[in-house]
Structure formats: C-alpha cells, structure tokens
Image (cartoon, rainbow, N blue to C red; front, top):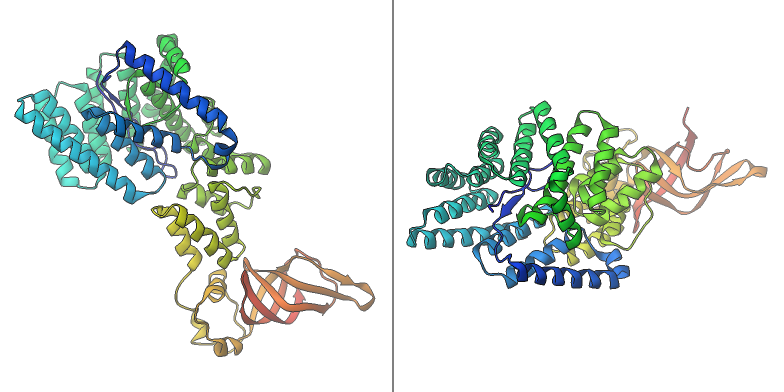
Length: 510
C-alpha cells in the first residue's frame, strides 16, 4: 500500500507536520509482525519498570525519536530509511531544533536522490516517480523552493494516475506555501483513492489545505467525516490491532495501517479542535482535545490548548505543567504562559526548568534566569527556543537613553529600561547616581509599628523587577504589603536578582 503524509500543521500557535504519509508495508509478513509485537512488548515492560525515572525526564517526542533512530539503524530499505529521517526531521522541528531537523531532511534528500539514480538505471519509471516525489518533499523542507517545485512537476509527468503521487505533490505544495495547489492536488488524490484508510487520509489533507485558504465550512465537514469514519465499525478490526500492538506513536510519515490509523485520528481531531476553537465553539473544542488525550495522554498540542482554554486557575496550572513536560520547547506554549499570571508548582523536569526560567524573567530575576537557561542550553545545545529565551533574558546591550541624556526632572522608567540597568555589564554609576526615579512599587512584607505610626519595608517589585534596600527602612505612615505604592528613589546598583535602591519618598497612590 502506498504512503500518504499527515497533516499541514494545526493552528499557527502549535504547528504539526504536514499530512500522514502511509508507506508500503515493507517486510510485514507473519513472522515480521510477530517479531514486531515481541519488540513492542519488551519496550513497554522496560517503560513500566522505569516509570518513576521517565515520569521525571521524558519529553513526549522522546519515544518516537528513539523508535525512528532504531529504524534507521536496523532497517536499510529505501522506505525505512527515508521515512525514518523525515520523521526525525519533523520531530526535531516540533522541538525547535532546526539545525538537527535540517540535517535529517538533508539525509532524506540524499536517500531519495540515490533511489532516483538507481531507478533510472533499472528503467523502473514507477519507482523513479516515487523517488522523485520524495526528493521534491525533502527539497521543500530544506526551503529549496525552485528545485522542489521542478521535481514535484516531474513526478506527475511519470505517474499522474496515482493517488499517492498527488498526495505527495500536495505535501510539497504545503511546504512551499502553496495551499491552493495543495488543495487541488489533494482533490485528485481523493478522487483516485480506492481504500477506506487512504481516502480518510486524503480527505484530512484536503481539509488542512482548505483551512489555509479560509474555506472552513467544507474543511469542518471533511474533518467530522474523517473522525466519524475512523471511529465507526468499518475500522473496528484496525482499532483492535492498534490496541493489541499498544500503538500510540504519532508520526508524519507512517508505514503500515495501524500507525497510519493512530496518526490520522490524532491529527484529524487536533485539526478539528483547532477549527472549533478558532470559530469560538470552545465547549466542542475542549471535548475534542480531550478525545485526543484519550488516545495519547501526553499529546503536547492538546495539553497546550486545554491550558489555554481552562476555565479556572487550578485546571490551567495542571494543564500548563503537563504541556511543558510534553514539549518544553514550544514557543507558542511559552508565549501563552508568559501572558498568564497562573502559578504552576515547581518541578525538576525539563519543562519545569523552562517554566522556572520564565518565572524568573517575569519577576525580573534575570541573573537567576541566565543561570537556569545556561544549564538547559548545556543539556540541549541545538535548541533554538532556549537560545531565544536566553537573548530575551539578556535584554538590550545598550543602556536606556536617560543614562546618556538625563532629563531635568525625575525619570519614570519602563520595565524594559529597569531590566537593562539590572543586567548591564558596564554600568556608568556616576551617571546613575545623578538620576532620581519614580515608579509604582509593591512590597513583599510589611512590619507595622503602630506606636510610631511607621511601616518597615525591605524588598519588593518595581515594574516586575525585584529590588531591595541596603537595610530595612521605616516609613512614616501605615502601608500594606502587596499594595501599589508610589516610590521616589535612586538606584545604587545591581543585585543577584535585580536592583539595589535607596528610597527617598513613599506615598499612597491617590
């Protein structure tokens, strides 16, 4: 059976790979199936025995990556090698490890190019068309647009009556950001499909392209049809096979009916839920995302969406924690978390450490955030997300304008300007000493001295940046902790977590 390719991303905030590509069942005789089941059983026994450790360290894509690396090491056919490297590239890309993803796509291209040469030598034009289709897809993933388009067009000249070829052409057009061409090609694949699972895959792919074109009504109908059919009696035997094999892995390039079913159901439900969310049907979206988790409890896209759609802070915190553990490197998830004030309990997982860095940045503890992110980068040196956060924690290299062009009156600094001062490596202290600042602050603790009508403060937050005094200071008047107050002050220097300041005047906000 031929190989379709799964899904052109769901929403922009949480992209997934294009359409599940179903591969020929290479080496899938009775003995091969028995060995596969034995291997799967052994793997799950190890997972169960190691559960306490894996629960603390595993990222959702780890198992898929291990499976694909094993496939590449042990299976040497064209399909096995190509699908393995395409999957590894897509999994790396989902973790924002772009350089590693590029390396995998380049290997897939080399494999496809070699297969094209061998097929031409053997005068096998069907094999040559397939290899050309895969070469086009790999070129597109490497952003070689002109070459990818030329190869895709060439493949159609040799095999325009093949649903698989049209599906691969559509995949390439998606990667080339040509959704209208992708939709047209996928309609041809739908028309040529002869098997129910293939038809469901091509309909899903068509719906994905239609969403990109803004044609949501037809896309939603198609996705509902796909999900309904996959859950119908027509696929009962396939669901039983999935249950027997304990299949849960989700790939963009799949080999065999059971992996294709699992990947397609996962991607179709994610696409449908994202569409429901975009249309404001939030109750339906939550239900569909929960259906995704029923099949795979650590799906990062569904967990991130449910954190976004949570109806209370407790639920939101729970889903955020699970989403970060599933994919701690999703920038979309990180941006969602940065916009929230929810408090998520700390943990020692990779996701917990990324959250710790974000929380430190929120509180203005930039030096602590630097240390947390540097430790993560040492563990994941090729991760783009961690480097992005590190640059954001570093702040601008230049100092605020008022450091070189001081105003006549008091400075009312922004949060960004205070962070620049807190992290500056070469701070002009003479220029800083000449400035007086005014900001809204909140203090963490208050010690009331009722007999003297005084309140003692020592530390707090100014525009989200932590500060402290050299020693506790008593202010005339009665003030409360965690209440916005107007402070006039000077900045004396930097601390490990923020700023050292000298208070000049404290007032209630009128």
